Image 1: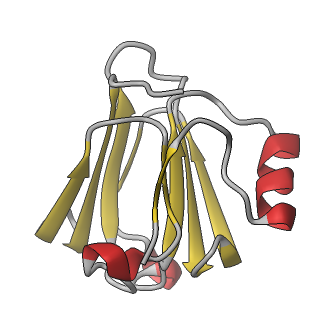
Image 2: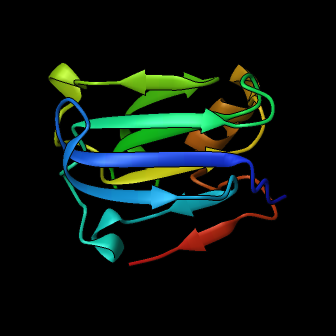
Length: 122
């Protein structure tokens, strides 16, 4: 389920500085951030749905294949400094809808992203 109203800007440095990667689609699962040469580099990000600010979810994982320590962000969110999570992201999922806790737990336990989204592998 693609949502072209979603924007995710990821930055290598705090305060939205340094190298930037922009995703302009809701419905992306990146199993290994090395595919973007961005493994362990995320320090800040901007997440938004330009049409409906509540309909976006970002899951960050500290290990590849949606494993390890996880962070969940729902709705339009700007994080200028991931603090103790800086430079730890190795995989992620961004969708153009609000995932429930149960859906997130299913993703985490099965290590399978939601259906009908683009998967980027290593």
